[in-house]
Image (cartoon, rainbow, N blue to C red; front, side, top):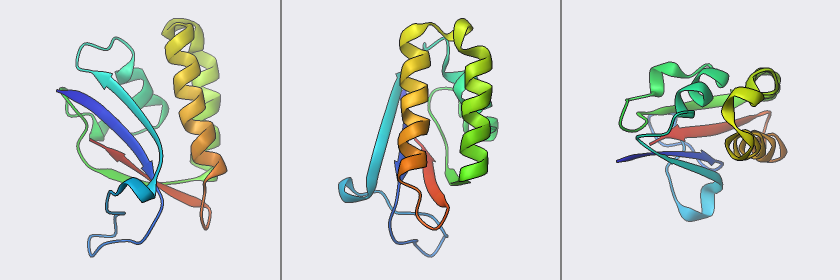
Length: 110
């Protein structure tokens, strides 16, 4: 089991979510269930309710303001994450910001 966090753009389904397809994928972040920092990434995104423990559950839209706030939070805790995780989390958020469509992007926590 693992956390498969994927930012998506594309058409919404009847549940108001973007259906996963390779074409809709913007950026992916994966971590195994033993990751020591994945919980902090959920916190940075203010999305703890999508942390299912062994993997993520569900997803939601993020806007530019929320993503910029997440970057700010990430910068404040980056020293506790370690260099590699900090850089990968920052890159994920930056790619989301660049791919915004109508000031939003869907992030699926799988």
